[in-house]
Image 1 (cartoon, rainbow, N blue to C red):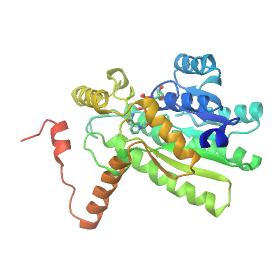
Image 2 (cartoon, protein in one colour):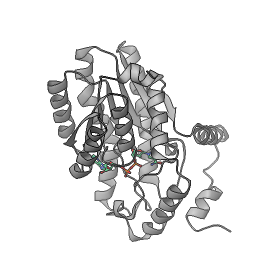
Image 3 (cartoon, rainbow, N blue to C red):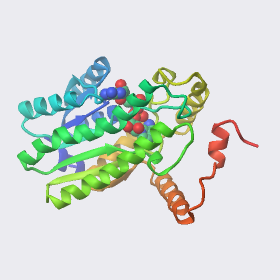
Image 4 (cartoon, rainbow, N blue to C red):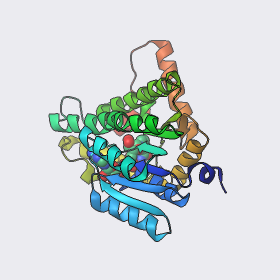
Length: 286
Ligand SMILES: NC(=O)c1ccc[n+]([C@@H]2O[C@H](COP(=O)([O-])OP(=O)(O)OC[C@H]3O[C@@H](n4cnc5c(N)ncnc54)[C@H](O)[C@@H]3O)[C@@H](O)[C@H]2O)c1
């Protein structure tokens, strides 16, 4: 039996945005190691498919429609899962969207959607589930999806970047709140470098300015060409969860590089500088 199976087998995992991408990869991995997986997504058909795939492989899974931008939907999810299963061992606040465009060109609706999904979806997932976890009193895990972008700066990906900076600091504060309360809840920050997913697909950019399409297409191409295999990345994430790590990176070298760049920037206290990768992405290369 692997360490992951020893710790998680027989437990319930609730994953948001699990109809595609990293959420789907994590759902598959949790199913493989013997968890009952509650596959939730705003797209119920996708969630159904992922749950059916886990069941077809001999695992346990169910699918539920949940839009994480609605706090009441997360309250209802937590109540329902605890009523039926009695406990949740692992909550993964994964759902997130990318938004590209100059700050002043992104319409209000897309701004609100980005902040509601990427920030409030995580905040209210925690707010809804923690009281039940504390009442049950058993060891549990909450993992929030940060990003390599949590430590970087990228013009025209501002909406996404600020949301991921927020999630990293949210998880750090939450970790300490659990320490203060001596709660048996492990808080983890999952930091994907780049995994092959659908986050940059053209149809995910609805409501972005037209000028964002080229940037989105370039990022989609980079992800398809250089991204890590989804299942390998998710295997690493679950391994990190079982090891009770706070920092869980798919590509630790990328995290180290990004964090080092941020530290150097803070220490210099100089104005931000447009780096070469950003210039090339924005079509400004010399
Ligand atoms: N792919 C990467 O390399 C990468 C890198 C850094 C961080 N991340 C983070 O990982 C998480 C997952 O990203 P991904 O790349 O798998 O994206 P993805 O677009 O492939 O999948 C996201 C899933 O979330 C669902 N979703 C979108 N809005 C939702 C909502 N309001 N409520 C519930 N579900 C919703 C979508 O239907 C989809 O199934 C995000 O938080 C993202 O910021 C990904």
